Length: 488
Image 1 (spheres, rainbow, N blue to C red):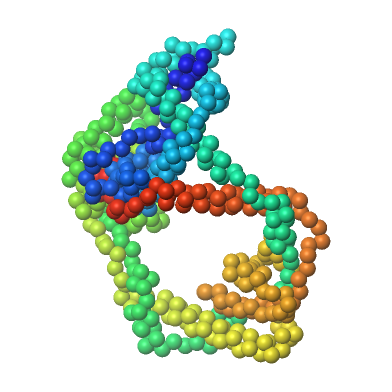
Image 2 (cartoon, helix red, strand yellow):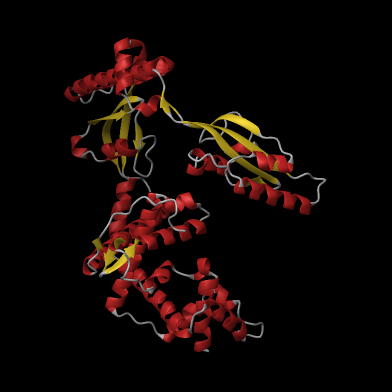
């Protein structure tokens, strides 16, 4: 029975890869060539390299798995994430081998029998369809020993990772302390100094405006890149036989691809009109309906690819909706450019005025803050007091909440000044603290779970750092921007 079952999952591991193969197994027992060009080595773990080719291939597979395209697979950020994943897998694999972990037959059998795809191979009478499984096994090109080693390796990885990540290191008492801190309430009053209230008091000069324009980030006053395009659309005729349309669609796809320097051959062959559209940006065409051919994200993305922009090639035909195919080509590419001052003068004045008003608001807040430090009990002008906590922050977020909640109660009443870019400055007056009247058991439970997760993550990070050192991880070359042919 064991020999039969242990064959089964290996086949399904290849046939149903995305469903039943742990990521560690895919890379963990692979052999790596040591004869590759050293320039392609990115990182070495125990002397064995992770190469640029491995990263590109893995990135391509993962991009396809999540429905992405070649541009996603070639992006530096995506490939860096893949490299990090491969490195983590390699370090954990090194730890498994060095710890000499073992997996018993019973554990392996139980693991295999828990897989739904394995269970489907059992017949109604309870017997196992060995012939069907052997057929799958032969298609996978693997023998029993290879499969056994791979599945056992998967279990070792899982046992090691779970044993580290599930270490119980957080006591209930610590969780209660943290929950109490999150529930503790403070009474707060706010006094806002809004920039909009000071706009009438500012009057930037022409020199102020021009200085801001020339010193500011050019992208603030930049017109986006856009293209003028030609396009053709093939639509199915409801009265037309489906087979006839299928043949036309094949011709449409093939002609626009094979004769990619013009749309005219396909248009003439299929009696289509070549249409034009100016001002297509990366966001599409302004003011068009959702079913417009150039409103399709894939069409727009292709129009800004190198082949379309630099080489003026037809984009590959795209089926935008059932029965509708589109191809297009760039006639003229208009790069992004900084607009002249006279075209953006009104926007420049708005931004400069806003900056000046914010400075006036901040100055007024600072003056009031100084006077309140001398007379901290003076609450004139502040809004009505409210009780807030980390669990119930009201309208306080980020730095404002942290500042208010971190004040030592011994210093009450206390003041906090918070600048809110684009809005103004707010003074917060904090004068009381109290414990909650009741305990929210549900919230405590959720917070205890969150604390446990954070503790497990910290434990696992320490584990990885330890084995990273033991494995002698060495960075050889930085990951570079992928070429257009990478991962093919």
